[in-house]
Length: 251
Image (cartoon, rainbow, N blue to C red; front, side):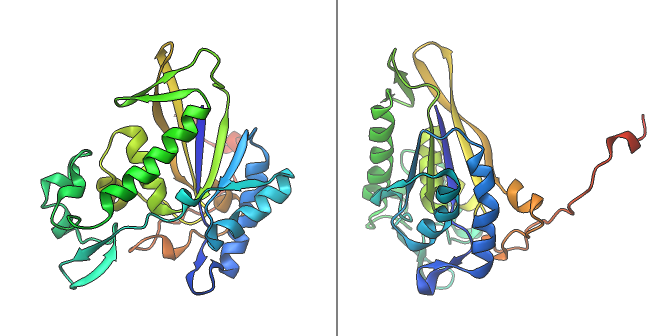
């Protein structure tokens, strides 16, 4: 079983869509998605995700099922540094790292920053919905891994066009990590591809392993820079090298 989370392309939040650059990103993504053997496509109801999906779905001749719970993670917390409400992943390091509960996958929502908010209910809503989706494919949550039905569709590839926050929440559930650590510690730029896949070292007992996180190979190939809206710092940009392997010296 393979899950692929695609973050929406560079967003135009004001108009509930993506920017001109975002459309270039989405179009570069399409031939990449076309090369996958996708069982089913799912999409957030928000415009920036829907529009990102359009070129890929058109290239594949497919449609996506819209799932309400794939919308952006709807949790806010109080940012004590600038004294304003902020998204769950907009906390300064000198604040969130000082709270031990933020590193605890079972108690992060009990910290002073999230106590009294909808953090627990929203997290349970997203992760519960994800587990129901997996159960339909024959993967049933048991503690921190999954029991697999004998007739489970192990070759399924499910693609979700969604958002940064909800992707980190789903990853935290699948990998057994606090979402706060992932929300503040991962770089998942617009239009990037995140892949997690099950492994069964014991038949019938599956755990998820991250294969790639925030990959932007399609942008690199298309010589399209990674969006500067993806981070609080300038993303590292590689030059698009034209490799000639016969010219590489031996060592």
